[in-house]
Image 1 (cartoon, rainbow, N blue to C red):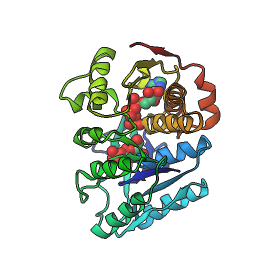
Image 2: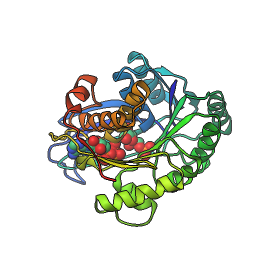
Image 3: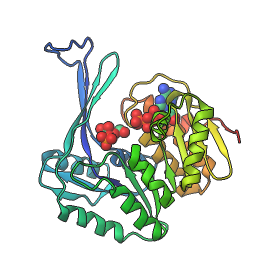
Image 4: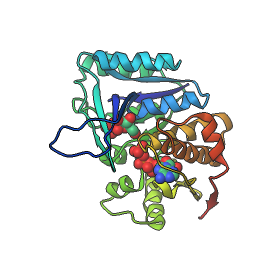
Length: 304
Ligand SMILES: Nc1ncnc2c1ncn2[C@@H]1O[C@H](COP(=O)(O)OP(=O)(O)OP(=O)(O)O)[C@@H](O)[C@H]1O
Ligand SMILES: O=P(O)(O)OC[C@@]1(O)O[C@H](CO)[C@@H](O)[C@@H]1O
């Protein structure tokens, strides 16, 4: 089974304002809301690609109920842990640019944390666990490291989409796949990653430190897949970007969907990049038919 774990889910509230003026009353031209949080996005895209999975994490209040009900209508399995305060609302303001304001999220009690850890303790060899998104401020900062260590020791394939020290601290526990974007990769090493050569150099460091497969996403410039033996570059399809929120999560979901079906790293990489682009070119998360259409536009070259 593939499990996604979103410690800090959100209701994403996407508002379009044509001529936004700071400090004034602005009115939207349209608005829409979706369940969000990186692991939840991975669950939704996996399901759309025909891969069963179960969403775990903490939800609370009316916003939490909204997320749970929404995922049920999409027939996604859930086993969330309830907390007392409301799940956060993340505002995505679409004007000429895209501005995001993400909430802090609810307090997570020790009891709620133990419930989640129990669920993780029951996972078995060959299960996949996706840890994605920020860590609520009331949880230990090293929670991803603790979970990764326990899960990999049982043979669970752990996928981590996080940034900064959180990501750096998990790599020594041999996660199966990590996916920093090129900015996040630079932040890990206090450098600016300004081109493919830099991205390869620092991506390879993460492999040396223990990560099995490193995907470095570079938005419209595609992505790199770095393993112990090789480096591959994928081009991204060209198109009209409508929404980049969730593109990275879609890459992770596409990668896992194809990997679990075909056990082939390069097909997984191709499907990941096509899924990321399909989301970027859609108003919401990608649909399977669009991912399939974009697959042939992703070319992969072995560069090392
Ligand atoms: N402008 C674009 N054109 C084509 N494909 C894109 C574009 N932006 C994103 N993508 C696709 O989505 C993938 C992930 O994008 P990106 O590198 O922006 O990830 P990210 O920063 O983790 O995304 P986010 O945090 O917004 O979900 C890229 O590898 C690419 O396949
Ligand atoms: O605050 P975090 O956990 O880092 O990111 C949360 C978030 O911005 O990430 C997703 C897109 O990747 C959105 O659905 C959600 O609002």
